[in-house]
Length: 178
Image (cartoon, rainbow, N blue to C red; front, side):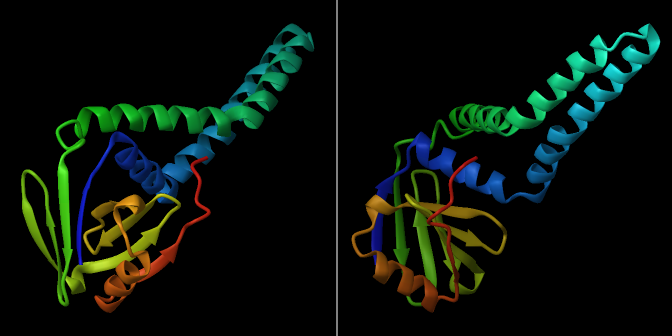
């Protein structure tokens, strides 16, 4: 099975966002920011209240802490997406809109782009992750091949071929960046 396609900024961006959403360190960092900042606001508000014997400090910083806790997921989602968009534009600028060819054989996957040609043993394929618009072929080295769904004519055959090579299929059709 041969696939020929071009990757766009959005393809690389979706992969980066997906990888970030599955990263334990990114999840922990986002959760810590959501919890620690409001605690700091509350402690500072309490300090001002006790120092000045005025309840305005705890009120203002308490409301700020509640707003931060409530709206931080929206803010962090926007911020991370913006960060990864800039990252993709800077680090993948030479790979955007260049031809990629993937050949699925009985024992290996051959990937070819404008700079290199790689032959990957089937035993090195770890997972086939399916999202709404892409397939990500994850290798045992945790690198991934990005395959846009629109470039595949027979998706069932594609999945079958990769299953024969020993990849674990992961259904992430409902995955959405948040």
